[in-house]
Image (cartoon, rainbow, N blue to C red):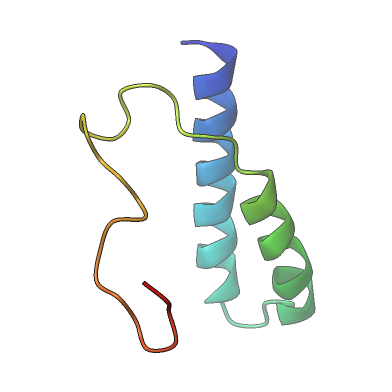
Length: 68
């Protein structure tokens, strides 16, 4: 596995663990609120082959307030 794939996989796993933690009794939601966005921003581009060929994440319906 390439370093890029390992980084992506590790970050996604951390986000998943954080989501599980957020739903436990007594979870520190301030910690979740602080760490969650940091992890999401640090998410690298997905490794090649992660999405099907021709996939465009910006393709989809127009939402209210969007120009287009």
